[in-house]
Image 1: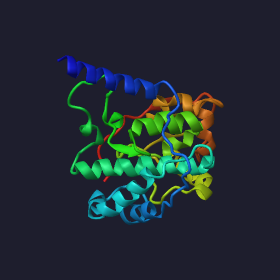
Image 2: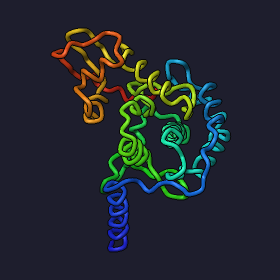
Image 3: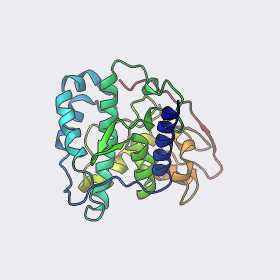
Length: 255
C-alpha cells in the first residue's frame, strides 16, 4: 500500500510541476520538420467540412506513425525556431496525436469515453494522459494546449486550429499548418468557425455561440469584449448590447 501511495504522490508532483510553470518540452539543435506527410494524410482522410475518415487513417497507420515518430524526435529548439515554426509544430502535433488516440482505440463513440476508469489526482480526463513523447519526454495533449499554445503564444485563434475529435469542435483543417501560411490559415479557420451556423448562431441583437467562448473566455477578451472578438470574424455584426448565450457541446466522434 505504501508503494502504491508513493507512486501516486510522484505522479501528482510530476503533474503539478508541469501545471505551475512554462513547459520544458523542447530540444536544442533541431531543425523544423517537414509536415508534408501529415498534409498528405489530411487531404486523403479529412473532408472539407472537417469530418474525419478514421478508417482511412487506420489503413495508413504506418504513415501516420512515421510522421509522429519524426516530430517526436524533432521537438522545437526554443532559441532558434521562429514563433510561427514553433506554433505550427505544436498545432500539428496536437491534431496528429489526437487522431492517433482515436485510431488506436477505434471504434469509439466519443473521445471522452477514453477517460480514466480510476480516480487519480489531477488526471481528470483523456487529455491528461501522457501517451506520447516529445523529445523523449512523456507528454499529454493538455500540456500542448494549455502550457504551450495558450500560455506561450497568447493567440486565441489556436482554439479554432486544434481539434478534439468531436462534432462541436472547430473542424480539423484538411491541410497541415505551415509557418509561411500560418496567419492566413488562422484567419481562415477563425472565419469559418465563427460563421458556421452549426457552431454559432449570430444575429444583430443576440447570439448563441460555442461553449468554447465560455470555457476560454479570458483568451478572447484580453483586448475587448467577446462581442468585439466575434465582430472581427462574423459576417453578421453584433451590436454592443447583444445577448450572448452558449450552445450545448456535442462530444460525439467527428466522423
